[in-house]
Amino acid sequence: MLDVLKVRIYPNKGQEISLAKSFGCSRFIWNFYLNRTNTQYEETGKGMTYCQMAKDLTQLKKLPDYEWLQEPTAAVLQQSLKNLESAFKNFFAKRARFPKFKSKHSKQSIRFPESCSIKNSGLKLPKLGIVKASFSKNVDGKIKSVTVSKTSTGKYFAAILFETKDLTTKAQGKISGIDLGLSSLITVFYGENCYKVDPIKPTRKYAKRLRIRQKALSGKVKGSNNRRKAVKVVARIHEKISNTRQDFLHKLSRKLVDENQVLIAENLCLKGLARTKLAKSIHDASFGMLLNFISYKLDREGGKFIQVDRFFPSTKLCSCCGYKNDSLNLSIREWICPSCQTTHDRDENASRNLRAEGIRILSTNTVGHTEIQACGEAVRLVGTCAKKRVSEKQESPATL
Ligand SMILES: [Zn+2]
Image (tube, rainbow, N blue to C red; front, top):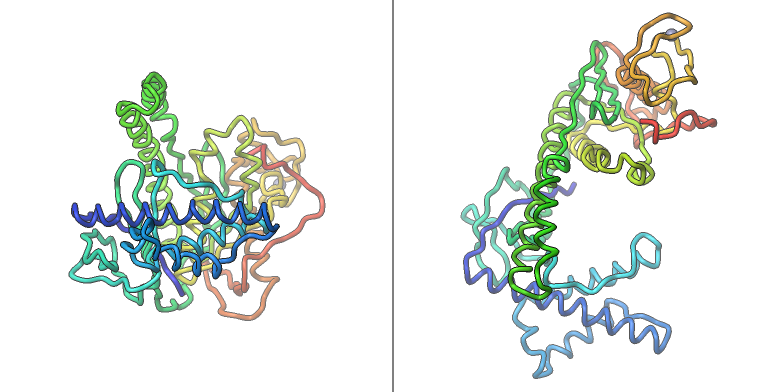
């Protein structure tokens, strides 16, 4: 299976110049062929394929005006064309917007599809030699490609894609249901008990600083050096916010994956949520990112991540007797079941229901793989992320 490791790299002056040239050429190629494809499409009704562009590029590089395109590794420029072709494919398959021209002021990136290795605890890249890098863990497999990027704040990173051994199925750990929310980011029920984790709010923390800097930026003359500096300062604050959030979510997902072999969460409609007035909190909570981290980490370690259909009434069901309480709304944090008189914490009750539903899915959709033993319940694993359809819609996701 493939794994990705992202590391910070520290190119020296010469390597920085060489990278800048590669970024420039790769961007030029993208813009040049985007323009050419558009023109050709207008004239003939057909765009250019990767093969046509690559052939054309070989000729282009021979022209005296374009000799400078020979400086970077040919594979990097070809990769740029491949990216352009897939950008068009994604657009026509309605997965993405129409490809845009790239600017030299936004994030830069190039991909080395071959000939990369790790040497003397640095990263060896074609034509650049060994670039100083700080590795957080070992790359113990064949490197498939390396994507080098430079942020708008001037930092360099390398995303190393490599082949790793398939891991055996995770045989230990708990089965937990996770309820996502805004007052508590997650409520985890692991069978015996339940705990909550509060969200962090970096957007709020940095809001004032961001406002001041953005105001300062708007006063600067367009195209001036001062403006460029101010743009960088604003970008650095945004970077700080997103780093704080990602770091927190990485640590949280790591803890969850270490403790569990099966995690069960609700499949949320995130796009719908982000459009409501809770958008800022939703953004800070980054449910999607958290679920994504959990999913790939658990997958990599042979665990199972189950997403229960979002129409499953996890909040409204009584986890004791199964009574469905339709009178619940967002403001009610605690309720007493009219049928069995149990007092429920809203989030804890939901996480209990999600766990039970996940176990039900696991045990009914059996295709006969490894059996899991956790907290006394024997459960058989399902091949893929299982879903349950409940015909009537019980709770809109906006009432989280
Ligand atoms: Zn009840």
